[in-house]
View: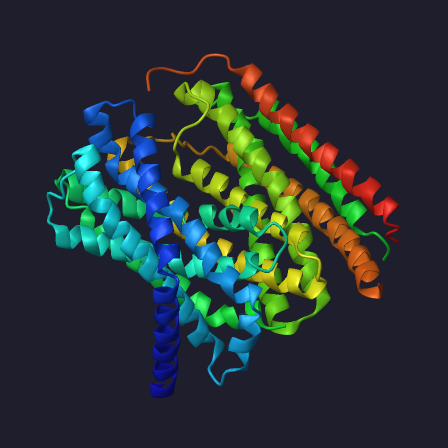
Length: 226
Length: 216
Length: 40
């Protein structure tokens, strides 16, 4: 058990140092997400009430669209240099590689998500009435829910033909529940949690994370083996 | 026995004709929804069998990942295609039911929405299968994706139900009369037999295609 | 919901018609396909 944790920590460290070198990629993803927010405000027809009400939805759809770019990129580097095969030669279990990759993707999405919140406040007048901490927790759980199945499917799609098409096709239906839960939780954060529903939605996200992170750790070996 | 599934399919066809006749003509009119409720006798069996089909894909996926025996991959391929056909049909039937009942073609009913999401997930897996050339990778990857998609179904249902319950409550009136249960049960088995015919025929086609692919 | 929904047979017909058509077309597709692929 201890050894497994050490391997995970080593792989996470490797991914994070990779991310630092690829920080232009993170910045690009963030710019994309912010651009989608701007576009959504035009789609909303400049109606202040409507924009405020839909802010949570715009946040998560924008983040989801951005995630397909960053997830795809995270494996493009590996496939282009045959680095995935090299990784498999390392004396670590494949589950640790999965955890490293998924945490790397989680960090990118979390950074982008946290960057989007102030823009939501400015553009949509969606102040986090329930406190910044709860909203940040929602963003953390929501991005963790996207990154586990996202990492699995990016690993598949990156080595198939038509990978840019395939990743959203596989990922979007899968993350429907976490988009619903994250949007409802964020809306409760933005507009006030009058019905006390925030904690139930966060519980759904936790359940989703537990299931998909476990499945990823369990099945990743089969996806990357040759 | 050669091509036994054709006889199963014909049996299903006969039962479907009988069950539908019973449901359309002999069964009593439902007290709130009137004759529109008769759609149920084909709609509910389609729903059960679609779910059964995708569950069979999940079984095939676990079977392939566990044993690496090609028969499981044939099962994945044939159940996904069959499930997509019956699932799309199911969504259309649901829309046809929704229009006279609630006045709109689409309601965010948890079941209708879950079916749409489920069909989309498995459509993605079918696309994945067509984009991968190596048969072993195709089998493994689509099995992995099928496991994820199937495990996700309860999450989708739960989330849509909770979300919908915050905005509107929609009741589906249900009064159960034995004369309504009978045609429903007949048609459930009828569609099951027809689906078995579809899956078995698809299974044979998949086996033939793999045989040729692996020989190359 | 107020009162009984009157009529609606056109919807019932559409639902059963589309179902029959879908099953028939898929069966024909599978049979033609299995003949093409030389399934025994």
